[in-house]
Length: 153
Ligand code: 4NP
Image (cartoon, rainbow, N blue to C red; front, side, top):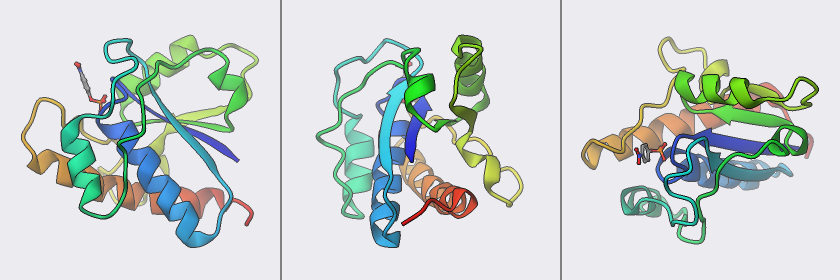
């Protein structure tokens, strides 16, 4: 199973989502290949935002080796799931998805039952507290998503 988590810049939310899903898969004994990308080109080649690196570091998840990249058309064939952080990311992804794409393209928070948990707020322009909120939210979403797709061990 191949998962691509996607946000706008690929420096705040999706690198954190990648680290969280990788660790959840490890803890559950699941074989998942996880990558992340951004719909925008602003930060290609950069490391994740230091606020995301610090926040995930608090729970022992290392994002420091990730590098930002932009979504490419081949992602829609290579990955089983392309997972958007918010509605704007989802719209951008659906606009570039080829007609014969094989990936499921949905919001990452789609399968969380709790009301209003669908979108992961962009913490980029806020303060550090937004990054903790992001981490907690992504952790809940990752658990729900893995429960929903029930990948094989
Ligand atoms: P991300 O956050 O999409 O979670 O990586 C952002 C990063 C950069 C910008 C916006 C959002 N930006 O406008 O540069």
